[in-house]
Length: 108
Image 1 (cartoon, rainbow, N blue to C red):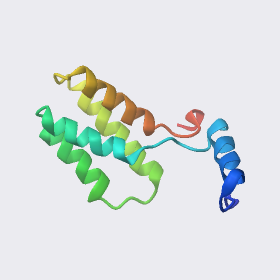
Image 2: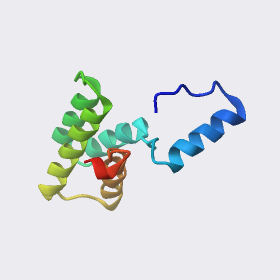
Image 3: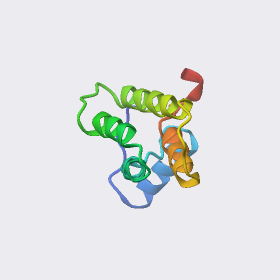
Image 4: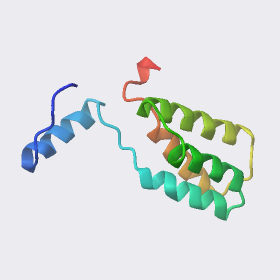
């Protein structure tokens, strides 16, 4: 939005709630991707885990949108390959895929 956020206190909470309600703020959890990588390795999908790890930790990105787009594409390609997935791994993939959605879906 171009304006700086207030420093703290109740006003910061109000600001963050407004951003979330307006769809300006994502609820991206970097730890969610870390957990997904660990879970993928534990369930025998080391190649996919290595790919995500490389994208997250060893690739320079111009923008967060670029990173999110590539992460989403990578996860979708993996799921389309129809690997055997546990219920919890499917849920983790869905959660991380949701985190990559653009704040304004109509601008895809």
